[in-house]
Image (cartoon, rainbow, N blue to C red; front, top):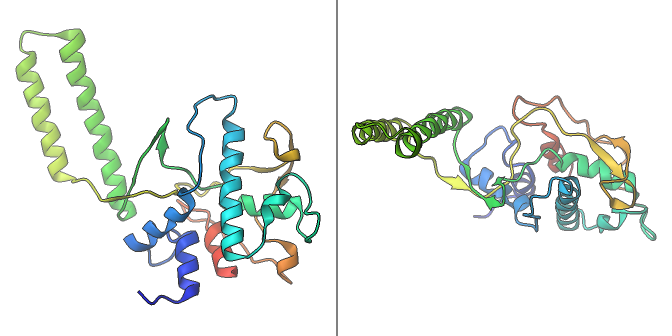
Length: 232
């Protein structure tokens, strides 16, 4: 597909935040999910794992679309280029609302569809989880004489739910699901255990005469990445 490059950038960085979202633009945001991530589950190290994950996103996005090596400014102001730690962590604040689609140590797809379709699927999955729990209780803990018949009825209800709300196709991508962005702190020496001041979303000062204006968020997205992509 011969696509304008500015549209390509917007889809790669913020395809889920566009006005005309399609399956193709959602799949494009898989760009953010393709880097390394830590699948260990030590809660004491979780903040550092997240900082490392964001570092990969910042480095990849800035090298690809800005042509600068901003990653050096994670721990110190750049020694040769006019790029600072504030530039680095301000840009990290743009990407920080993204969530990885993992459950524990398992990566998973994110459903493709409208907000209404995904909401309906989530409701269906909650109902299926309740039925599965009941089936487990009948099989393991309760074990009544008519367990077989009860389980058959619950299985029928599961099939009915799946028929009414079928599975959606999925894509491997990061996503946002809230208008509230997490705090982004400047990490001294790049360590999550050594937090500094609170950062706001902005682009590297040396690259622009004026900062882009970040709009009010939507109900399920901060719109920070779309603002960044449009600025590029």
